[in-house]
Image 1: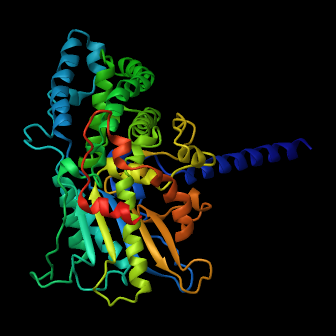
Image 2 (image 1 turned 45 degrees about the vertical axis):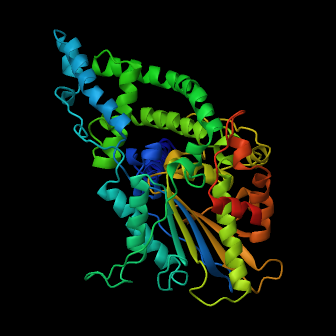
Image 3 (image 1 turned 180 degrees about the horizontal axis):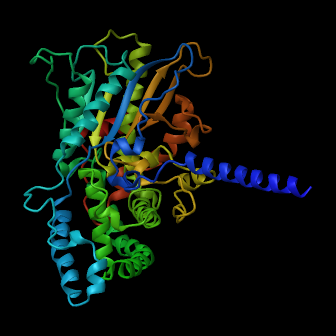
Length: 481
């Protein structure tokens, strides 16, 4: 009997050990490149997944595509380059402050001494880097492959409309995408490239793609909220400051932690360096800092205030108008080449995030009703709680929403359907019974119509201020809806 117990107990322990090691093996290793909020590269955000789309129901064919995309990976902006330049002297002061304390100097990261910002001396900031060009170029290639019937026509600016903001990184992204989309379809050079047009509105009046710049009420809201956002971040930054001081023996401040976290994001995303600034932080500290960035995105650009996304109504109207034109062309059996088949737009996180919210994506349960009632949602929960709202998913570099309009003539209830792809993956729409394939009628009634109770001027004009003049095309679109 005793011998049996001796055999059973080791076997029991072996089973437990096997289950423990198996569960750990199923968990992918922690990759900081997937936890950089909106500084996340597109490939890291998608984790190698691209265009895994189930076929549309039998008899349904795509007849039009709308794309709203963020620019690709870019350099830090001028303001952020100055912050990194200042970090040089701050790190030097930390090291000099520890002189005479051998214990602190032994703990201090060796790279602090003499560190220079990789972006020192750059005259311009925010420019698209080569990796950012590739993100959009290959997105263009995949888009044509995925919707080959839509992109089978010879190029015409009236068939394939490409729009971008006047900011160079957005227009360069549009060009990179177009080079991929139309590759091998022209007569220029050995690669058979072709020319194509990219349309931009003036920054001062671009209410379609830079509505955040044209909305004074939003500018006031953002300015007033930024101190409160900083206050929300303080407990996390203070805890990490304390940990850093103990871990590395230097007198860190909250400002040091904030700048080092920014440097980590830039090094990991732009330079593929994860063992320097990023190496300072533990995985648990990374996910907390990522959460603070996501909360800021939520409050200042997302569901934290209905104005953040309601001001994007001109863009939503433009999308719906293009769909209605496509339906009309289908009904009237217009000849190929005489009507638009795709409207492609390239802008910024401040464009993509509000548009994502207008579609009601990344919502759960009662959140849908709250947004329709224009009530702010609760903040994303702090780790270790899970959350659906993550900047690395909602708006990474080159992040995008595609709205594909399908003709389904065999369907008796509605001949036209809409499918939304977020970062090339079908995404469920709470406003469409959590389906990613929604009848156009339901899409209009449940998702679009509640937003159209407002107009841009009413939302954005401060009392006593002259309204921003919409481009003539926008005014015409509104009258048609």
